Image 1 (cartoon, chains in turn brown, purple):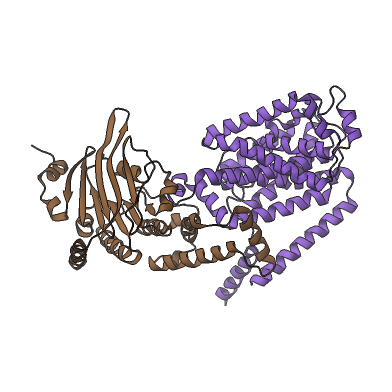
Image 2 (cartoon, rainbow over the protein chains, first blue to last red):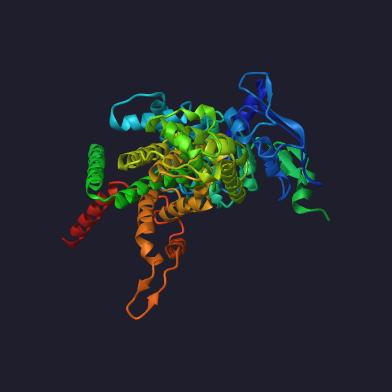
Length: 288
Length: 350
């Protein structure tokens, strides 16, 4: 575990040297629910290839910040910007719908697992491929009908075949290939989490937002998850932004950390800075 | 194995056509009418199942779409002379006075007009969810009925239309039913079908996976409305007379009953329960008449048979929450799996 940590730090230091483009930027986003300010003036930016953590006590507004970035909530104030790989043009994504944001390349998972419970593991991943489908509904039905009777070729059948191959490959990569045809709700908890991440990966994201990926996991599963997160970052060339309560995981895997408390950003820095930050300790343990 | 299944499918379809041929030749007109109704209710059940079962949209507006389809087909297929006879209070609008289409294009047109109605209603209503969507669609279907009651020159108002050409026969109704079944099978197996099911399972997750909720809900709703329109057209041209009162909520309830009994989200379940419900709706007519049990004579109460359906619905909901079939579908494996099971048993005995 120590080794993984050291390796990632080294990589981070190496990257710091070059010029790295920002891929996602939140500019003073504020969310008010009536009189309650859930998140106030949250600023952050993600550089390509980073793993950034967001921590804070319960009710600090972490998930609200996530929901603003992914379009579930519209921020009361402020904007969120996304920029394509190697381009300096920023797109304002504040007013896009969640599905449009996913189409741009920002995928997410949920705090309380939201799999398509009645569907198989493979179907769950296939559904995440649907957003790239070009064929229309009528042509999909008729080409499948034709293919069931005679040898037949069409755009839809080609797309369907590619989808299947990609999904099977992805499931193999994340180690879920042997439970491919099982109902997703029948998987053990750790594997459900893994499937949720795999499903998010199937949308071909550039940025992956993980909402408490280690919630409810035992220490062994958490360590496996940490390695897994590092591994997919390298394999899929991702930038990862994650909320996590499990300190071991956050400190082990994240390169930069934001700390939220009562909607305010109280600290920002690398893990060792955060561990020694007085405000953070106060927020977690309270003051005399 | 795959080729075997294909052959089995073809054999099954041919056998079924043979059965239809047999029924067409031997049954009296009353029984043939029931067979026709079965086919039509299969189409209607599947169309509601696509919306309610596969996409998870609780819509109660089916009777409205059926009315649109039935009236469209009726007005297109009636001969000018019959129209003259029907519209004796006020003359029919000029652009419909002299049209007389063959049945097939009229059916398609009925579906298309119903689909347009579905799209127009769906676009605003599908922003609602669950019970609110049910209330809104129910309201829209009543609005359609009230409009049809009041547009005297277009629909002949409350008088309804009589002496429609009765084009619908076993081949039309069951031909449409078989095509609808095939369409639904391929739709639900494909990528769009999976997207619909994803919306049913978890809207928030589906949206986070890049599925545009609104687009897919409207697609599903419009296809459902198209099929409902075709079903309504077949029904109108089977009965030979239609009026706005036919398309009350009661009709939607009958189709909902079929979908819930068969299994919300199962094509097989809907087909089976459409046939069972339609046949028993007629077979249970004895309950409406007075019965002589030898020692006591029970006087007939019209509508007694509906009590049986209500009780049946309660029993199914109590013991099979998901309907008889749940979301399961028929496959030929049902037979082969059983055989495999027996073989294992034999090995154990040895």
